[in-house]
Image 1 (tube, protein in one colour):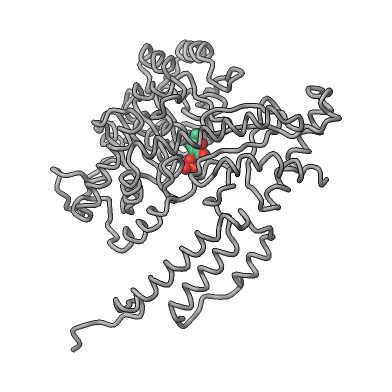
Image 2 (cartoon, rainbow, N blue to C red; image 1 turned 30 degrees about the horizontal axis):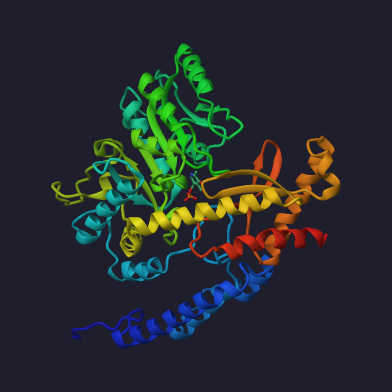
Length: 488
Ligand SMILES: Cc1ncc(COP(=O)(O)O)c(C=O)c1O
């Protein structure tokens, strides 16, 4: 009988140390090289599949791990988009904080299952502390409940389910949404991120239950229309239960009139949810829009550490004012789990059962630079965005459209079209021109932008949640775009 097992997957600590040091060296070299390289290589999907040898079948025999890690690093470093590049300004994906990169290694090494305290004593307590710190940072009561999830969609889903359970006047978890119960209706501005459709669909309401409230010229929900729609639905015998205010819309960074929405929710006994996946983290910044402070009135808030806390993917966070609203929405106690109930078991507070240790990377970064460091870094992203907007305002080749938080939108308008802006034919032409420009900028690898559609105009969109972007990168952008546009 042997007393030790030598499994093929295992490694000696010596081998692990050698492989780990080599890998960390390669990552460090890549980080140093990245700013001078392209944001993204210009290669078609077929080339990426070719490099991977994607048709290769499952190997029967093993390969030396050193060789495997070296190849994986080469594949990824040569065929990826780098959202850590200073000129990545697309979507809302941040540069990953290096401490988060190391933290994921540490988290995987311990591999705590953060579903229950018994399986993850220290990790559970670190997650609870992280949730409190995030709440504190955005100005939400630290007594709230909350947990880390995969991102903004999931954080909003968790809050949506807490609202559904709390506001349906019956046991919706048991009886569901069919039968004689009135129809639950949810209210959100027309600029709300598509998570709301997925939530209404996945959780049984159907997307017809969403009442899309129009926005004003600043892309903010019109609260007069919200009031009217709630009254119409109540008169029809429907059951309004949830209003979503967005703190930083996905397209333009607009902040809904959260204070007013909170008042309307109180008047009608509705759940007030704030989708702050992007913008809630700006609530800590002194010159941020005043309405962000009103997220403290919400019943729940979604916040994404993998957006403006620069955590590597994935990390979202759901905050719910009364922890019991989460327990009431998610808890079951099956006989096969032997978990103490005088400690925190996150399995009772969300949809996941086995849960990874997402909190570590957020917890470490929050301590690495502290509240003051984050305030300074987020404020700098916002300053750079305003600077970019001014550059486009002052440049006759561009039309600056919107600026809020760290998102600026604008479009290229060639001189001969200046006087025709607004005319349907010219608008269609400009939309196609800017759509094409966006594709060509992406192919160039010199910068990475995304787009928004604002009042029918196809706009280019720069979102800075990137602690590597500098004044130099901002100042270079109009020149890069103008040059690529002229190469038509
Ligand atoms: C306002 C808002 N809500 C929700 C989401 C979804 O977040 P995630 O992609 O992390 O699921 C986004 C993504 O950009 C967003 O901007």
